[in-house]
Length: 90
Length: 156
Image (cartoon, rainbow over all chains, first blue to last red; front, side, top):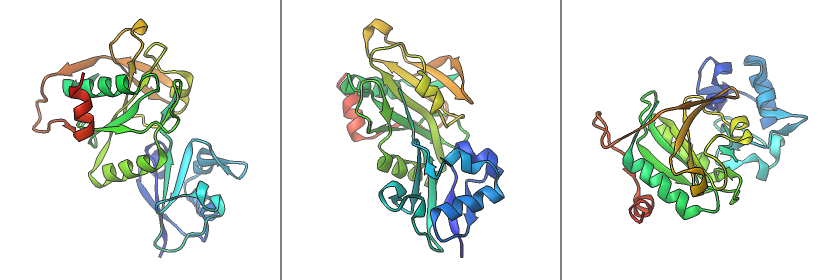
């Protein structure tokens, strides 16, 4: 069983317009690496230098990974990951 | 062009005035692909700033999940400018991530007028569009403004 990743509107051009994709891995960073293999270009939109971009939020189920172990946060089969860019501005 | 029910415009302006001098923000959801704003959802500005807004992350996640369940999408994303013209700022443009949405800006300093303005922001390009305020929608759906927000709108 794999992990479901919810893809935000802005990244859907990279996932052939799919809202949800499946990936396998044991932590968030591995999931992102696997997404990058399947959907090239996604990684740089989400992170740089091992850090998630300031205005990108990543959740494992209901938990913001900033308040857990960041990209090292563990995931298991059946979990869902949500990538959600902040709605923000000046 | 943005076609929007007057009650939704009133609700945005009421919330913006109430939050002034802090920037207000929120979303109006509609059925995916309909381009019709229906469900008014005021959001908490986690930045609580006069010059910046950011949807409170937890509320943002909940609201986006609900929209997903309902086959809705953000038709309007609105915020106020408390002391500048109602035109997207550099950060508004850099951080825009919903190319299908109408980005509405509400000026709350009378010096910059009192008309809301609407824009498309796609890949860093801003295009202003006309706003058509209507008394009713032709479709069966009508706007939904939940309790707190409605009270705020009626207090204008």
